Picture: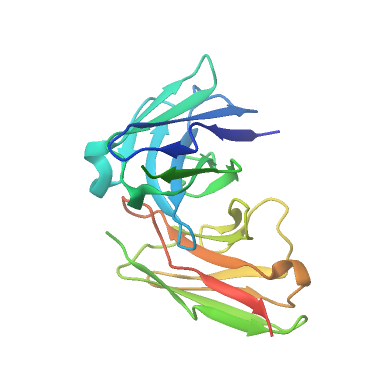
Length: 122
Length: 107
C-alpha cells in the first residue's frame, strides 16, 4: 500500500525559505521508473507542477521557478524534500507530493499526499 | 509551455445524466494526457492516463478519449459522488501542465 504525507511549516514570512518533506511508504525511490513530484494549488485555483525527482536522481523543475526550487531525495529515509527560498504571499497554497505511475515515460500521478497548506504572511 | 484549456468551466447536471468534459492542448501532446478528480479539501484522484486508460479502481462510467490536441472525459451516468472539479494534465512536454478545471455541480 502506497502512502505519502507532506510535512512542514504552515506559516512562513515573506523572504523566508520553505522546506517541505514528503515521507512515503509502499515503494522505494531506488527502484527503476519510480519518481516523486511536488505540486501546489493556490486557494480556489488550479494545480501547478513544481518539481520531480527520478529514481536515478535526475530532476526536473518548473522553468518559471527553477531558480528557487531544489528537490532532493533520501532513499534511506523514504523522503523527498522541496526547498523554496524567498517566499512571497503569491506562494500561498496547498502543497502536494505525489507518486508517478511507475512506467518509463509516464507523467501521471496515482498516489497523492493529503496536502499541506502553506500561508505566506508577515 | 503547453497550455491546457478546459471547457466548460462549470457544468450543472442532474444525477444519472451523461456528460462530456473537454480539454484542448495548445500543441500536440500525443496521448500523454491524464484526468483527475478533486473534491474540496482533498488531493486529486487519478482517473485516466494515456488519454483513455482507466486507473486502478476507477468505475467504468468514466471514459477518456482523444489524441493530439483534443481530449474528452465522459461520465456515462453521474452519481452523487462524482460532483467535483476535474482537471486534465499533459505529460508530453516539460513543464507538466494542467488545465484550469471543470466544476461539475448539481443542477
